[in-house]
Length: 316
Image 1 (tube, rainbow, N blue to C red):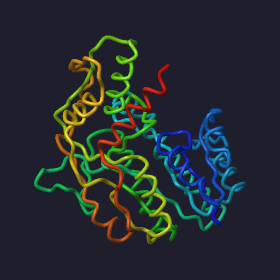
Image 2 (cartoon, rainbow, N blue to C red):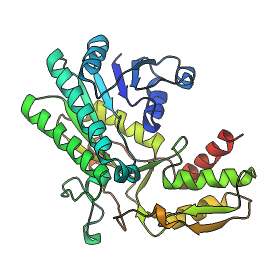
Image 3 (cartoon, rainbow, N blue to C red):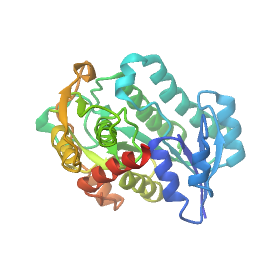
């Protein structure tokens, strides 16, 4: 039996990881700035604690209390769009919180394994000739969010090398699935369709740039990947977590529309376009498949269907 700690337990990935881990006999703890009642109801075997990761004393005290054998560090401000509006907030939340965890573990002398959740945004501007991108690719970040994740990634490597800490890194490409907030493209599309079906809005789906192509993985597959990495990865290693396929947002929107019986039209909102954006991002998952034994299992049509049904059930 192991003792796991999930940071960002109230987040999209955190909730799905808690669901996965709580099905076993392990001790599972979750920390977040706020703990809504729905978390304790949904996962009654998970022990939830409030913790402000920006505050070193708060982090030190919670780690001293729990003494986790493995930390899944998922907590982060994860919106690329919001990073254009609040770059200082993004850097503080994503970088300082991770340093606080590392320093508290060093002070407590805990031999904890730490799985750091990175992002494909770290790779940034990539020539299409270099796709699919593997773990050896250089970083060319195009947003403050991406810079913050590069900082987390490099800090993880530095603490592993400098202090021999048991740290592994996972660079997740785009994740989606039930529970994804509507601030993200696919969930926004599904949310709008569900609203239209329930006559809560006019029959128009507002979209941004549909011409980009992204590598999507179902969040339920992704958290299985985090877990397998925690069990099997060597300290200091890094893995892409991705489907290995590039999907056009336009094609994925058309799949969602095909799942609805409502009459729908599309309207482009140019305010949703980013100051800089990648035309294509596709990952190479060869390393995680061969070394860890993980590969995605949930087909994209099911992911989109489950996402749309999530919003249909959520909206009353």
